[in-house]
Image (cartoon, rainbow, N blue to C red; front, top):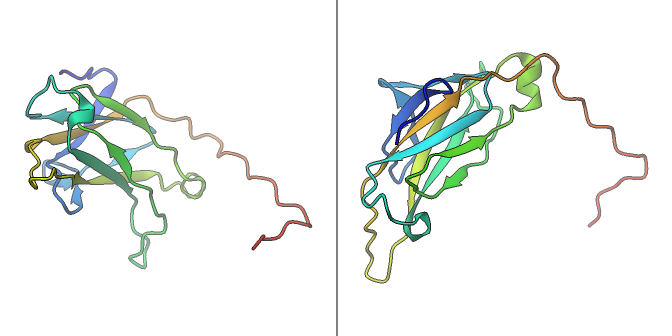
Length: 159
């Protein structure tokens, strides 16, 4: 499987384990800026002709935003789940509004492997690895999205 280098740039690679592992490029966490489209490519699949729904393991990817001056991450991200597949998987992640307004728009990724086992406590998917690419088409960051309208005066939480 080859990736079109006129459309995608490699961010980094990883061999997902049970714990969170950073996606690195030459030993340094790979950073992405001003793009929202990404591509995940799986390598070293045990049987590339196997249908993706037959794999017993999954890839879990989440974004890591830079820490603020107090050492805290201000933005929580929802992990994305992917089944191993011989075909590349494209996904899109919107920038949070607060990051667009502050100008802090770079991020990296970390991943882990989620395993499911059969009755014999076996998982024969093999030790696959991934590479993440970012789109070479930057996002137009001219104007942030509009602020949602405030709620009406009669709005209250319903218990």
